[in-house]
Image (cartoon, rainbow, N blue to C red; front, side, top):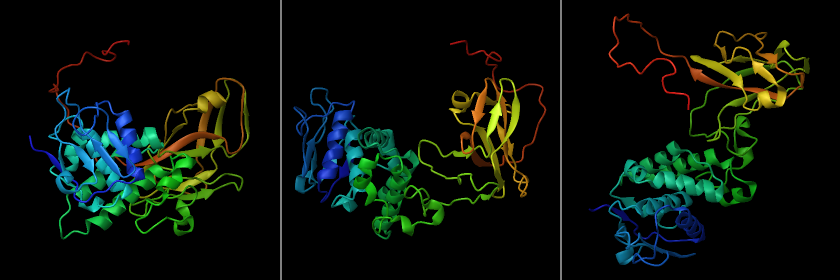
Length: 356
């Protein structure tokens, strides 16, 4: 079955070799040497690997540099294809010499179905500590693999790569950040002074290529730490802090001031829930379970508060993080149609899926 990746002029460097070694180690598919036996051969300037001949999974060798007869690799969608495509994604992201010439019979969807995208994410996370977004990677591949001669795909792919790395950058261990920092911006390193003021803090928390919404904030205390949007895969919720010191006895209720009033973007509402550690750290429950702030609650004195019930004696201090929020668009207009019977089969009623 013909399914080929084209590697014309693609080189290998130390960064790509490091990724390839990690990929081979982490792979659940057996990766062998170039003839399907032995072990993969990976040096700073070359990569030679294949699937397993013993398992019938080898098809053609993947060899870099991609020169002459090694300028293509027909994997025929065998299991080792996911390791090959993961290495090719890394070559694009790392801008290894010759990366512009990579092409494929497959689309980004084919690379994803073959497991290459998910495996690239796993290797990036397990080896580098870099948590990347699946959608960002697909944008990179969609931009790159669908290119035409008329399209300036290098610049567009650079922008997509910069977006992807920028989103994952703040999750990197400090020791690894220097390895990726040069990829943050297509024109070079993104210096903090080059960023909008709202994006300063950790580098590049706001992506200039992505549309952002503005939430206007009025603070009611100079002691209160200012809100920060972090983003990334771990969470895009924003922490809220107590604006006052509160002492509560077991069973007492208090409306704890969060010290802010907000004006939301038109068409949005704010959802407020406890942080996962709130009960453990402070022994309080949010009595309405989830707070909803609509866009009309936007005056200077419309201060947001946290309705707390103490289950033990507790103390909360200014700037303790006790809850978190996100904004979301209003639901669309709804219509209700009364029916005598619904078309779907009964599932068995409330609690029908069992106890375990």
